[in-house]
Length: 129
Image (cartoon, rainbow, N blue to C red):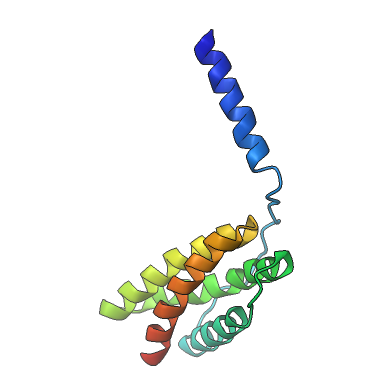
């Protein structure tokens, strides 16, 4: 019985700790179908994200929306590149997903941590274009 009570309390506390983190309805974004489009989107979306400085709730929301399109660009690269560039695109994909989730959940510090990682990888990737 004690175990059941502890489990129920843990579930309640866990839920209430995340109650202020609003999930956004997922957006549908068209697939990227060319290298040119993938590059253009990657550069533009990276620039848009880089312009976000405060990471307040509004900017985190903006970043979350931007990541939908950015993910499509990165996905194109992971599917169509080979070797070191493919590996770099795969690493970027993981970080973009972390940015997506943390910005969606209004986690400023976590989002900033992943953005820092992203910009290092993105700058390296852009130089390879």
